[in-house]
Image 1 (cartoon, rainbow over the protein chains, first blue to last red):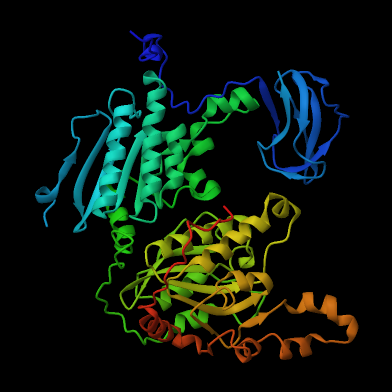
Image 2: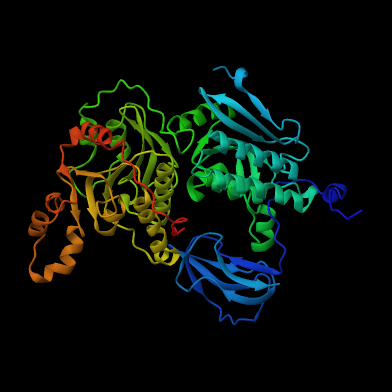
Length: 98
Length: 445
């Protein structure tokens, strides 16, 4: 008989959680915490190591600025937002390879 | 016709989650497809996908609308890759149905993962207020971005009504679903070879539109709700708005003129002055293309100062998305009537179904300003040459310049708008244009 994965998840007791698509990749995104103007604050070299919690920029809005911190550790692969760009909450600012 | 007399199950015992029935809704046959329940929260299996595919293909051959009521966790991962194939088959069938028979999706709970893309293929999407839909869920968003979001924050009905534009209408509860679906279908033919239903009407075709006339302020800088104009001009209580909370600077919906269905596109001066942006252009374009596919004449109301300026907009593709609206109108071969209410400046005037892109009848109200630009912008360029605001407004900001060049057909009293539109539609209703021989145009999607 040919091998089949039918029922594999069920037999392993994986519950249905309306989880949606699942992405399998080592890359992670650093996203804007709020709406505002993006300012790059650190001199970010491509390939440089970014620590979890490290600040790479700020989002400026009226009278305030919020740090943009990486939720992951990894190598900086690219900065996606441009300095001075108006960004939305959750918009990808940079991507790293964990 | 009674419902029991013509309710026919399709592959009724083939799948526990996907159930298809040809039934009567508001005296019309529809293919009613329910995707819910079963063993895994309405998850779509290969067998379920085959049932859906067969039902949609049958609807195409029968020329009847498709209604899909869905509460599904997506493809059934327990079946492996064959379940993905299942919803892929449904997607292919839905695309084959696009522009052939109307398709309406109703989300009553979840619609997640890959099959959520089916919503993007549908003509109309209804969501109940507690429904949600997304491709990638909160777990994956947290995994990749570190952001914590709830299902409703990510893809709740409110998000899809206002942010993504996926939801055409949000209904409060399941009980009103059938009535709203029937109302939407009442403006549409059962298939693209039919004309839309024409209803008997009691509203006088030549009724004066004092409310519409009074709704538009004389001041060019004042906002107003264009829906007051629409509700007065069209048959009484016939205006049915779609996607009202998404891109509110552009109003789209159906209405009736002398009992005939028409598609309505209007700038909304009460929202960011009725400027055109990316979302408004997309919203208008898809609606225009949809009306054209189903033989529904278009009536466009123009009051826009232009395209919204902004680096963000230009970077996100204002050119490509603005072109979508131009493309949709230029391709539309249904009767097209344009009414210029007030401001019609520059490129935005052109894309709102101007004579240049092919309207059939175009009229303007007497205070309309059809011009390359408004006074302030003109003075920045021409003021150094001694032109005054008064001279510019007297010479350029009026409907007569456009009328003299044949770009509008008439300048009408606002109160007579309904009568003019009824007459124009009656004259144009037999319009037929043979499509040119080509596979299809290359739309700026």
